[in-house]
Image (cartoon, rainbow, N blue to C red; front, side, top):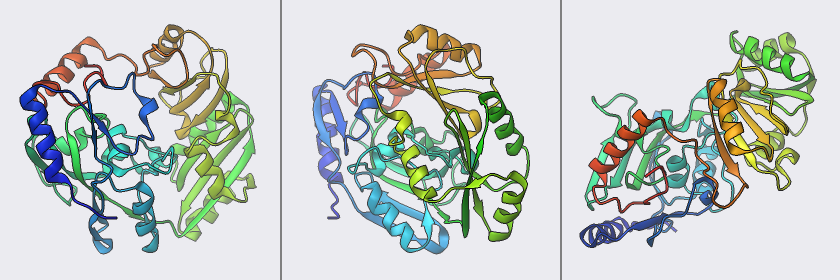
Length: 352
C-alpha cells in the first residue's frame, strides 16, 4: 500500500540529532549481512515509506519512495517491457529500492549496461541534522559540482535517509540467448576479455569452473550474428539460470564456507588461493568459497590490482569490507562530518 511517511521520518531524525541519539536505518533488512556490524541505536524503519511517485515510460524515468519493494518496481516496468538496467539482486522478497541503492548492488548485466549508481538521476534525503535535501533531477545531466545523488549509492545509509529516488530505465531487449562452452579457467578469462573488445551484444558472462556461459541481448539480427561467431550450446531456461546466479541460489553458493567477492581487473590471471571459484562480469567479479585467512585473500586481491569483500560467513568479528587506504578514509570521514555532523546515521556501518 502506497504511503508517504517522509514528515514523520524527518521529525524522528531531527529529534535524534538534537539528542545525539544514534539511528539504525532499516528497510526490508534483506541485505543486513553485507556490513561489518549492525549499528547501535534506535531502529528507524523506512519500509512503510513506499509507492511509485512518477513513471514516464516514454522518457525512460521512474521515481519511487525508498521503501518501495523492488518486486513492485520490476512488475510495473515489465508491463511496459522495460527494466532496471543494472539487474539488481534482491536476496529476499522484502528487498526495497532504498536498500538496493544504499548497497549499490548490481547483477549480471552490470559490466555491459552499467552499475547501480550510473542510473541514479536524483534523490531526496534527510541528512543527519534532520534537513530534507534534494539532489539531481530526472535527466542525466542536471547539476554541476559533486554528484550527491550517486554518492548515496554504496553509502549504506551513512550519508542520509533516502526518501525518494529517480532512476533511468531501459527497454527490455527484443531477443536474448544464452550459450555455454566447455573451457579451462585460463582460457575462459582470455576469451571473455577477447569478446569484450569486440562489437558483440554481450549482457552477462559466468564461468563455473567447467563451463563458460554467455548471454547475448539485442536485436534478433545482432544476437544471431553473435551466436554464430561465438558458438556453443544454447541453454534452455536461461532466465532461471541467470536469476539463480544473481540471487545466489546456484549450487556454487550452497554450503557453509565463507564466501568472498573479489573485484579485479578482468584480465587478471586466476589467483593462487585454495577453494572453489565462480567468475562473472567478464572476469572482473570473482566469487571464492574458501576458509583461507582474511589477510591472505585480501593481500592476493591487492597484488592483482583489486580488493576483496567477505560477502557471507566467516567469523562473527571478521571485517567484511575491504579497508580503505588512509587518504580515502580521510575524505570519507570529512564527507560524513559535513552531512551527518553528530554521526547519528548508521554509525559504524561503513568504516566510521
